[in-house]
Image 1 (spheres, helix red, strand yellow):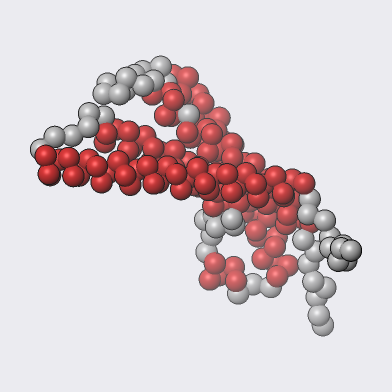
Image 2 (cartoon, one colour; image 1 turned 45 degrees about the horizontal axis):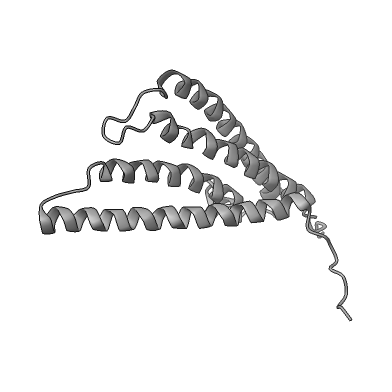
Length: 172
């Protein structure tokens, strides 16, 4: 026999957001681990054996670009995007909720503009090749529009969550 049904059902969009956030967090953790291992190996090789891995530093920078772009999107899903908590936390809950919604809309618009302009930029300069690793620069530069797309998606899902969360009735 099962217990009572929950008072509310979690919206499928919010479940998908949580799953996607966990997958991206796992990917970010793996990328940071790879960056750490690569940097340690590069330092040991340089100072211990006076040699290096050709393209190691470039690969580290490329991985860092992806972690930055994806990490910014994950922070939006976690509600940790740019804001001044000290000011916002002192406001009444209703105003705080409205400001959060406006903030998410502005962040979404900013990322939509960045998505548009970054794809234009990649179409112009993305065909060049990295001189050391011989990888098309577009494969690295595409991290920006990917991160922007996830950021926009998380802004939308956070707005859905905000709209679905009932506010307490004001007390007199």
